[in-house]
Image 1 (tube, rainbow, N blue to C red):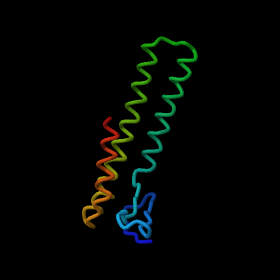
Image 2 (cartoon, rainbow, N blue to C red):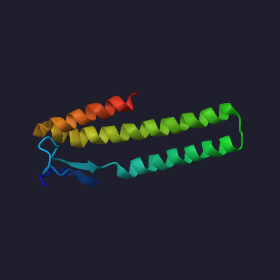
Image 3 (cartoon, helix red, strand yellow):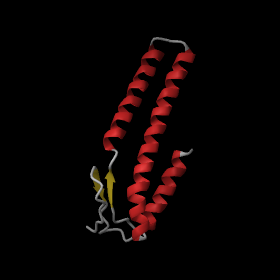
Image 4 (cartoon, rainbow, N blue to C red):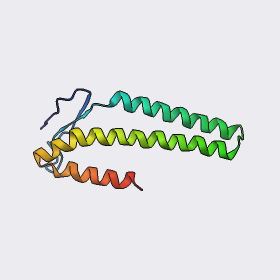
Length: 114
């Protein structure tokens, strides 16, 4: 396994490049893991509240407001993950000429913006 890691702390995820010559060879370090998990928990809480509101046949406007809170929490989580990825993985990919990681980011952002 060929790896190239970051020294940022946090959770690391290493890609195995032994079977794929195009695979990227750096370690994903999730320095914002706790912040992401907290934000996801908040979004899950909002979404559970929406479900209860629908079950209770609450006013549609109230449900929509709660859904806006869910969307906001998810969007903010995406921002934290993207920033973390840019500051660690993408910097490493640029330094090592890892075009696969850059293409993967491009694809992920395209899907995120749909």
